[in-house]
Amino acid sequence: VKQLKGLAASPGIALGPAFVYRPVELAAQRLGADDPAAEWARFQLAAAAALEQLALLRQKAVAEVGEAEAAIFDAHQMIIGDPDTETELRTEIDGGASAAAAVDIVFSREVKNFETMDNPLFRERAADFADVRRRLLRALLGVSEDSLAVLDRPVVVVAHDLMPSDTAQMNKAMVRGFCTAAGGPLSHTAILARNLGLPAVVGAGEGVMAIENEAPIIVDGAGGLIVIGANDEERADYERRAQALAEARATVAVAAHEAAITRDGRRVEVVANIGLPGEETDALQAGAEGIGLLRTEFLFVDRQTAPTEDEQFRAYRPIFEAMGQRPVIARTLDIGGDKPLAFLSVPHEANPFLGWRAIRIGLAQPELLKTQLRALLRAGRGCNLKIMFPMVATVEEMRAARALVEESRAELKLSGEPLAESVEIGMMVEIPSAALMIDLLAPYADFFSIGSNDLTQYTLAADRGNPAVASLVDSLHPAVLRLVDNVIRAAHAAQRRVGMCGEMAGDLNAIPILLGLGLDEFSMGAAAVPPAKALLRQLSLAAATALARKALAQPTAAAVRETVKRWLADERQHSP
Ligand code: PEP
Ligand code: MG
Image 1 (cartoon, rainbow, N blue to C red):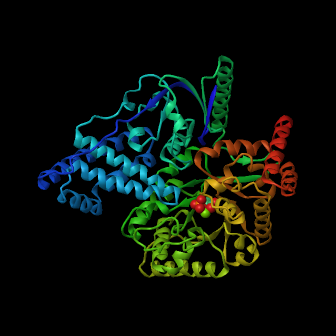
Image 2 (cartoon, rainbow, N blue to C red; image 1 turned 90 degrees about the vertical axis):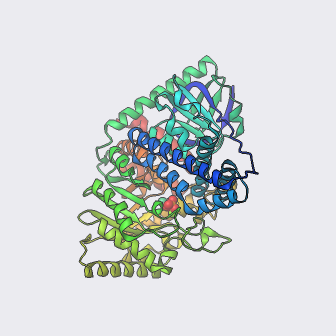
Image 3 (cartoon, rainbow, N blue to C red; image 1 turned 120 degrees about the horizontal axis):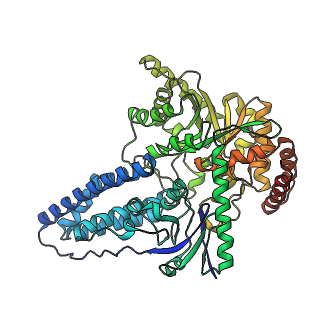
C-alpha cells in the first residue's frame, strides 16, 4: 500500500478508479510574425471566442453550483477585457510576436507575478491567469477542449491542479472526489470541493501524477491522505467509514435548521462566514442563523479603481435582502500589507502582517472607509446590520472608527438617503493588545468577535501562511485559549456579547472548549454549520465548562487536543 500525504481540503472519503487528468501542453511559437495587424485581428477573434465560451460556462456553473462558483467566469472575462493586458499584448505583437506567442508571454508573466505573492489568496489568482492563457491559446491554435467533460463513469479525479474552467466543464455527476499535486486549502479546487460536498486532498506533491489511470484509489479528505493499492480488507474498512460519514451527514442535515441548544439548555448562536456574493444562499441552506462575518475584500481586489458607493451598495443589498431580519456582521475592508490593492500604492513592507493593513489603511484614507460605511448603512436599511472593524489594536482606533461611522451617517441624512438605524458597531479581537484590554475597549465596541486565525499568529509570533512554522499556528495552544478566556470574561463583565469568526469556531475539537469558556456566537463556513450544531446539541454546558478549565491548564497544544479527544469520546459514550 502506498500513501501520499497532502492537505485536508474537503472532508469525506471517496473510493474509485483514478482518472488522471493531463491537459495538453500548448506551446506557442512563431516569435517572428511579420504582419502585426493580422496577428492583432487573430487575437481579437480568439478573445471573442473565449468570451463566448466563458458566458456559456458561467450559465452552466450558475445552474449546477450557484452564483458564487459562477463569479469566477466574470473574473476571467474581465481579465480578457483588461485594457492594461491589451496594451501589453499589443506591445508584444507590434514587436513581432504572433498572437499566440504574445498571449503566452503576457499571461505567463502574470502567472509568475501572482505565484510569487505572499498572500495565498493572491497566489490562487495565478490559476485564473493560467486558465485564461490556456483558453486563448486553445482558440488561437485550434485545439479542442480537454477530456473532463466526457466522464462517463464514477471516478476520483487526479490532477496536477484543476482550473476553474476544468471543473466547470467537468461532468460532476461522475466525480466522487479529487486529489491534486498543487494547491492550498484556499485553492479553487478546495473551495469547489467543499461547495459540492466532495472529498478532496490538495497539495499532495508531484507523486500524485505517478498514480496510474484506472488504478483504484482512496481519498480521505479529512485526513489529507491518498491511499493507492489498498487490499480488500482496507478497502472494506474505508467503504464502511464512507458509508458511516454519509449517514452522519444526512442525519445532521435533517436538524440543521433547528437551534443549537445544549442538553442543559444553553442556547448559542451558529452563524456563517461568507466572502462572495451568492454565499448567503449556502449559509441559509446550511441552517446558519445569520452572517457572523461578511468579508468585503472581494469588492476591492483585482481592480484599478476603488469601487464606488453605489457599486458597493449593489453588491451588499442582495445579501441583506436574502438574510431578512437575521443579523449580518459586515466587516470593513481588511486588506493591505500582504494583500496589495492595485489602486492604492502600498510601499513594499518587510513585515506586511505587522504593517499597513485593515483599519490602519481605513483610518489613514478616511474617504475610502467612509464610502464603504455609507454603502453599508444604505444597504442595511430595514435589516439587521452590524458593522465590525478588523485588526483593531488600540482604543484610539475604535474612537476614530466610530467617529467615521457617525460622519457617514450624518452625510447620508443630509442627502435624505434611507439608511439603517440603531446599527451595532463592533470590532474583531485578533491582536493580543486588544485581547488584553477588552474592558477599556468596551465603551467603544457594542460587540466583539474573536479572529482566532490572526490572534493565533500574533500570539505565537508565527506567520499563518508560512508552512515552515505551520506546527506553531495552532489555535488550541493554551496561550491562545487563555486569551480567549480573558476576552470572554472581560466582555461579559462589560455586558458585551462575544463571537468568534476564525476557523477555530467551526473546529469540532475546539467547539466544546469554546462553549465551556462561554462563547455566545460561533461563525464558520456554511458547510461546517450542520455538524457544529449537532455537536453542540450533544454537549452540556456544565461538562464543557469543566473541560475548558482543564484545557487552560495544559502545557501544550498537543496536550489540549488529547484532553478534548478523550473528553469527547467519554461524553459521547454517556450522552443519551
Ligand atoms: C481571523 O483572523 O480569524 C479572521 C476571521 O479574519 P481573516 O481570516 O479574514 O484574517
Ligand atoms: Mg483576521
